[in-house]
Image 1: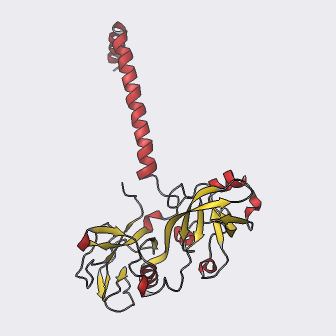
Image 2: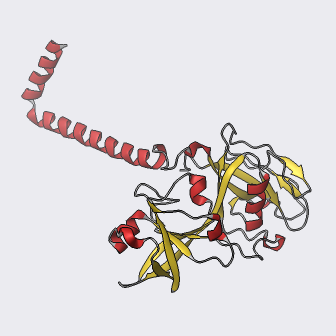
Image 3: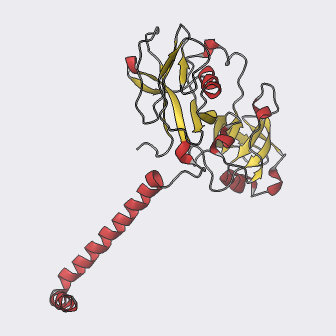
Length: 286
């Protein structure tokens, strides 16, 4: 082996131009592969910064008859599934929003997430300062509160540890800061800077709101529960223990969930043919 190496070095010394091109080519290829691996690792391989992310699933509505495989969920859908599926340990619902952040300095447009108070418990993630949301924060008429991202707390408020309990203005509305999340935390994307409670109005809780599907539902499965749920039909408002359930305004209920991204179809009294489905939150879709 040593003799082969010496021979290769002698041959390269006879053609320095070729040797230079070969070395540069190898260096560029190694650098490119390292960069590609870093991107793939950060997007596909690196786990989410939430404990037990393999037990997190997204639950959504699907309409196979009209070719809509992935729709949102309504408030009644969320409430039914969270209460009626025994395999779910905790669940949350959210949608994106944006706000003008006011205060002593210049107003700033920030990306926000309107979430049910169960979000941080579902993700099993706590605040670095203060607290996350509690059940009372989601009650209709409760005082308005907000949780800040670590990046916003650092850049906008100068890492002021006394920010907890202070009042800031979001969309010209005074809100009280109750928590700051750790630097490593994000949900569902690093660009989110504030989280505010998703407060359900009495109207949103009624069956009239089924079909108003502008939100996303994420759930944590109980230990030992596989992501695949069995499909079950029922005409009552109580879901069977193993069913992820969707109910439409005009009639029967269909329970169906498939955490391996396969959607269940059925004959529906509605023209859309709504079904419920779920898929793992990890690994993320490409």
